[in-house]
Structure formats: C-alpha cells, structure tokens
Image 1 (cartoon, one colour):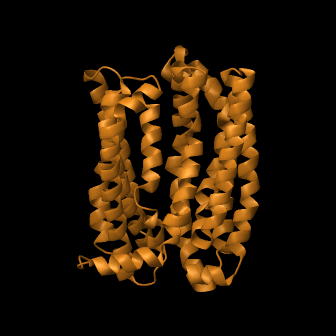
Image 2: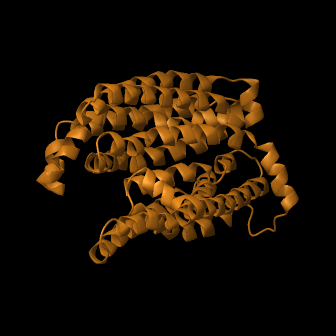
Length: 380
C-alpha cells in the first residue's frame, strides 16, 4: 500500500501539468474555464501514458522492490491518477469561486467512501487489495459534486476549442515548466523513504513508517490544506489588486503556526501510547516513529500550504528549494547506508535535517509574498 500510494502521489503531480494552479489567476471566467478543460485533457493523456508504462514495466517494478504482489495492483494506478487529476481541477475551480462548502462536502464524502471501501474490501480480500482499491476510487466519489458546482460556474457549459486550449497552454506554460519539476521533486522527497526503507531495513519497517506517516499526515490534509486553499484564493486576488500578497501571507502564517504549535505540541507527549491503544501493542513501534517525526510535520504543516506563494509569484524558487530538500534527504540516506543506521537513527537525522530546511524556506516565501515586483503583476 505504501509503495502504491507513493507511485500514485508522484504521478498525480504530473497529472494536470500543474495547470490546475493557473485557474486562480485569470480575471475572466471564460479563460479560467479553458484552463480547467486543458487540465482535464492533460490528465487523460498522462493516465494513458501511465497505462502503457504499466503494460510494459509492471513485472520489472515488482521485481525491483522484491514485492511480487505489487504487480497485479499496478493496473489500478492509471485510474487513480485520472480521478486524482480531475479532482484537482474541479477543486481549484471551486476555490476560485470561494465554494468552500462544496469542497468540504466533497472531502467528507471522499473520507467516508475511502474508509467504507477499505474496511469492507479488507474483510473480503486477502492482502492489501482493500487499501489499494479504496485509495484508487476515493477521488471519484468527490468528483461529481465539485464538477457540477465548479466547472459549470467557471465559464458555464460553454463550448471549448482546441485553439483556445493551445493559447492557454502557451500563456501559462511556466506551470508545467517549473511547477511540475518542483512538485515532482517535492513529492519524490516526501516519498523517498517509502522507496528506500524496504531496501535498507525491510518491508516490516516500511509498514510501521507508513502508518506513522499516514496518521501524522492527516492534520496536514484535513486542516492545513484547506487553510492553504483559502490562502491561495485570497493571495491571488490580492496580487491582482496590489501586486503583492503580504496581508494574505501573514494572516495564513499566523493561523497555521497557532494550530501547529497547539496540535503537534500536545500530540508529541501522547502519540506513542495512542498508537498502542488504537492500533494495538504490536504497532507501538509506529508510535515511536511518529514521535521522532513530529517536528518535521509541524514545520510542514506551516510551510506546505504557504508554498503556493512561489507558484503565484516565481515558480523557480519552489523548484530550487525542492531540489535542495531532495539533496539533503539523499545525503542523509547515503550516510545511513554506509553506517548501517537503524530505523530510529535514520528517522531522527531525516527529521531534523529537513526541519531546518523547511524553517529556512519560510522567510523566503515571505519575501516573495511582500515583493511588489513587476513579475508579480505580469504573473497575475
């Protein structure tokens, strides 16, 4: 499940060519509608390409990670990427409209459908199949209401033309040129341990680590990302009006910091016994891993939603910082390999190394937000 999820996350970054982030910027709804259609077309093309890749390479991928059972489940990867891509486009259209109630409803539906599918299928399918299928189809559950509410209002049910899509693709080409590589490096870095831990420490350690990441990632998805969505809408509007996003950035940063300190600060002292109580004593190891990684997730909770500032201003900064994160992660893993570190030593070094990189990125984002440069106005 951890490996399948890592593949799906990385592919989802490419799914729309990051054009879904450009939906916030146009002044006219018709242009936003064309960008949304363009993002959907890219998602279809990317998922088709992934299907061909699975057809050719599925056995080699399973053999590389020494997990034969992964081979049969890779067929669901193109479906997961397509549904995720459509969801991203529809969600961005709703954020542009300020339809936060529709987004909240869609996310609740997604969470309920995923939980129901994974539990129900887990009772009838041996192995990770229930988790994989639940992960695959969960985005589809939230797509229809978002499409109906978002895309229908952003431009209405107007016809689109290939020539208009081509114009949008060229006008906002900085998103696939800079945001896609930055997103790939970022998600690749976030999933790097999912790929490396089975080779260094075995699949059991990966299972403990994956559960810790899933629990710690829940606040990021359910709390920080919605704040980030509101921030993106307000910041893009502020940039269109004033050329900078200072007010929106400070407001978003203050909210995220307050929640992060309260949430992760309190969880740090109780996370290990919570794991043992909720998941069973055999999963207490995952609780120790979660405690080690807590500072890193507290920093990500603040910085990740605000990182959209780079997309709204200058995408090159996002690419540079994500490459730096990947380099730091690779160095830590290289040292771990040559010194035969155990899991807790590896996670401790990984945690604090990336923590300081994220903290250092925050003032850079602030400078981008407050800069009333000519670039900001042109991008907007």
